[in-house]
Image (tube, rainbow, N blue to C red; front, side, top):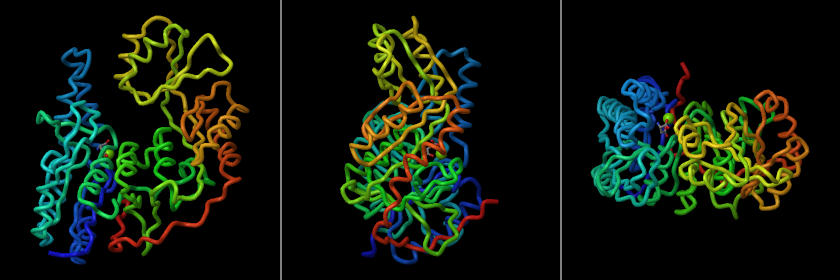
Length: 410
Ligand code: ASP
Ligand code: MG
């Protein structure tokens, strides 16, 4: 038995997209295990597998003329994506002479609610993982999935492998949860779209949760919520980083983290509006949707709300709240996010100078616009929102457990 701290590490879909990348990950894991760390590795499905499986289910659904896809069967299908990765990684590790063993979510003791396709973790009993670790094995876990109390396989919502990793890190009392993807952490805006975006080395849970609610996909919102609940530190890194000390973002308690601001653009947002007296019907039809905020400024006869584009929810909405509901697809939702309560009114005031309807929520304000308008406006809004708050110094140094082998992108 070793006394080195447990390492819980998660790899996202692009990091495990093919056998070559899995092989490089296996090499890096070998060094962590060699250093004596008990190691739990949570994996996503390879590349775009999950989306492909969902598309396949939709085809099967229309072939059978189904109105709605049976969510239990969807879970049976999409949970296989991560199982492919876990088994392949374990096979590679065996070939390298490592003692590895793979587990599904349910074998790992992840107990969830019974809401198929969007379940929440309610309890984690990682007995089998603990046993594997005490036997000196590397435990590989299929992310994104668990089991309900009645023994049904469930999945945790898109991007849910982060949630699996954070839940396991909490239950195993690991000192942190390392999340490897194709980006080296969190920026003030998407660096692929905003040239001036600044890397944020250290942020708080609430700030990150507000960014995730606004549509940032860098970390899963449910994972951030669980991390805050358990006080688990998240380290977000890139598995492609070439540096000896990789760049990262640490997500820790808000009281410790410096003041932060960010701009998030969610593409594929949908605007919904209707007369005030249809609000109740709308709210009832949206219980399973991500977010719908009433907007009361200026227009007193209609409510306005937004949701992330999702065919299933839209079909349901059209069916339930059919009369007088207007639906406008293909919009961009631009959100200004901050880490202080006073940032919300400041963000709303800035957005109101450009847009008619502003939605507010804790730590952020958002507005819908056409993608073309967003393209023109985002750099200016980023400049005006972020520049008055230059990034503060990085958080405490926390070195990775090993210098991971960078993955080649080709
Ligand atoms: N494979 C799942 C998805 O693509 C879960 C994850 O990657 O975290 O949403
Ligand atoms: Mg994925």
